[in-house]
Length: 175
Image (tube, rainbow, N blue to C red):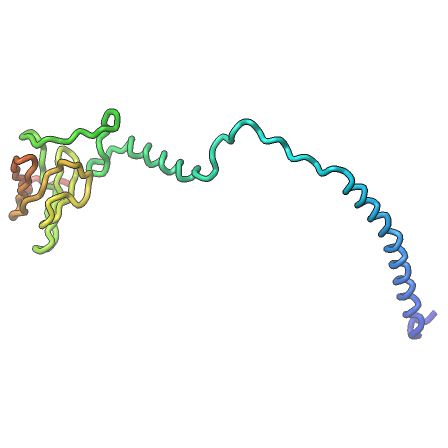
């Protein structure tokens, strides 16, 4: 049979169409009965809630871990001037002004209007700026030394009505 005739193609495609419609008509009632059978069955029950709480709360996990990590790092910190020395029961003792305080001028830098000085007070490095009494950087305690003046290579400080002077040692170079 020649497929060049227009009627031959129509009969073949129309036959496929009729066969597909008959197949769909036969499957629709079967699908409806299966859906009706499933809807008559009760839905599966949700698992009962467990009596045990979760091992950790999900909302604060990251924040809590970051805090714990920071606390552990500070507890193990040994960098003078950045870390506070460990104290018992978390209570810091206010340092007293005494003659035995080891005060060393580490560096004096800046321009004449904005001079800054780095001091090592008992091993802790504090940064002071001219014109401000309290330290601007380092481990600042409530009773730290107050800067009175920067005079040439010397620094005048006061704590608890005791005035101290420390000078830059230019003869001893340290890396």
